[in-house]
Length: 417
Ligand code: F3S
Image (cartoon, rainbow, N blue to C red; front, top):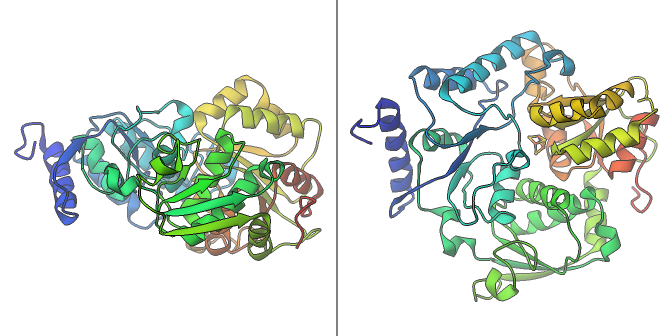
């Protein structure tokens, strides 16, 4: 491949991957079965040119490859009020991806679209919330691929290193969760748990013990927040995730470096310390769908918003991928949601969009573009303060809806600031 037998693009790509492996002392390259491609978000200077230049070399992907989120809802560009110049930039990226054969998923949750490689297989992915889910919940092996993921997509190889190796998948820190099951029944509570554990675990591998009930949505929220309050890439949940049927297996027979007990008061502290809005404060933005929503979540949102109206001056985005939005349009959920004044946004989300402070400045938009946001995602909570520059509150799904309708923060009852 390096000698050009499989084309110039493969030769260039494998050269980068070999250099990556050499830099990390990898013993060999392995075949990968799937890639999630960096979307070259148009809000980053130079990214569009870089992505388009690479595609212009005639590069083609050689394995199944999906694409991560964009800065614009390209399918319905007017829906987020993104500036036309940014829409044009983003369209260039979309055209470049298409020419390379990348699947136009534009989402942080490709697993919801059926991209689920077999347990133990090797992949190269971007998007921290997807990476941690694939590693931990699906047992599919990946590192944080970054921009080099593009070269893996073209040559189908990755160095055997990092989280591809058994040894690095061993648990390091034990967290015994001592919280009543009924308190852990919302995404925001799992986000708060992820926030707390991520801060302690940093870039280690936390093992969580004592959780009784869970679902896909909770695991997704938990992982997304672990990956942002810390830089956790893999977690084990005893009795739940596939590499952790027991403590012994999660730690591969080793002893934890640290052991912590997590109480409900630790999660309350997350709300108290991170929420910069208080009960009754005016809000101008509410968002659900971080990580991107599934069809059942859109169905539930439509049911809750049926016959209701969003308060004047409030923007309410429910974010998903374009395929799920299509399904939701077919089922009538999008229409119901839109009748309330809320929007079902695809391809992007508030922190990936034009509403970042730096992008607003570049395109002459008001800064900050949002004053006060309500969300049910710990990842969104962690990012918006810095990136968008607004006040923010983490609360549950019902309180998000109630806040959007009243135009004021309606905090969940058992959390106060
Ligand atoms: Fe996805 Fe945006 Fe959240 S990319 S994980 S919806 S911050």
